[in-house]
Image 1 (cartoon, rainbow, N blue to C red):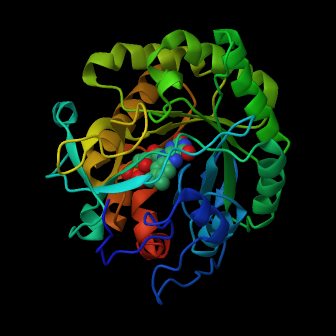
Image 2: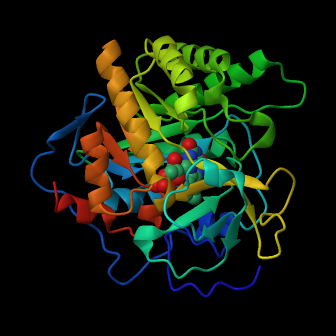
Image 3: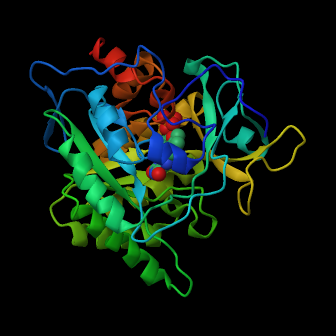
Length: 365
Ligand SMILES: Cc1cc2nc3c(=O)[nH]c(=O)nc-3n(C[C@H](O)[C@H](O)[C@H](O)COP(=O)(O)O)c2cc1C
């Protein structure tokens, strides 16, 4: 894989294994990577909670309570603790993050051809796109429930910590066992004192678990079970991009799950094949030719989903809030999402390489 020559640094260091990032991170990005202090009164609202800003980091780069502390201290006010499972689960093999030089938008047509994954890039941060492939690792609930409680203690006035949960398919599990495991993971998240819970119905990096959000029946079943388990804690559902051909499916999904949910978060990564310079699969191990793409090249898709969700919300009078995610690299991107109807906006790739993004956005709101 060669050594990176990239001058760019991220608080999650792609040149190091996941466990090193977990134990030793977050990495200091630059000498200007300084804490930000909120002041005055929080004037935004999300899920009934007051916020200093409707901006934060989605499930992913915030690996544990140390990362939560780091993010809150840098003014990211809506922070999601990385997706967790009801049981221990190993991370995919290293590397887990590669740079992609994508020319403009990653349209759906472009996802049918392999993209070149690299360990370095000349792209400026605003145009950065990557692939990430972790497989939703988990150190198990004994660790993460206690660690999420700790993370919650770092939540300051005007800030919100969210837990993200996913189900696991174990050998011999029926569909029902799998759906029930989502409820179990969400129930564990509830026991960690967080004030909102998200379920990840859109992870492309675990082959046998698939991308759930495109099949109506499990989406309804899981959402209902999870809501029954977590009671009055607001539920957020994280989905992927629905193409124009999938608009009817999206409408059905919204209609069926709106009684159970408080918000929809869109989008997760867009799956595409990633190869090395010889045309071979870039990420090692089975089922890893296709992995999730995120960053600047998917902004069009996140923005399009937010617009369509906003239209649906108006048309159906359903009362869900919208979390806009995908390719938010600059304050201007944040404002594009807000104009499209996002109540809250989040950035994973942009925040990783620019931890000052929240502070920069705060100057503009
Ligand atoms: C390093 C990394 C890890 C991620 N892990 C998760 C995850 O555990 N759960 C999840 O729902 N999404 C995960 N994502 C997807 C992000 O939440 C987000 O939907 C996607 O990256 C698009 O946003 P971006 O363009 O700002 O990166 C991850 C993204 C990155 C970059």
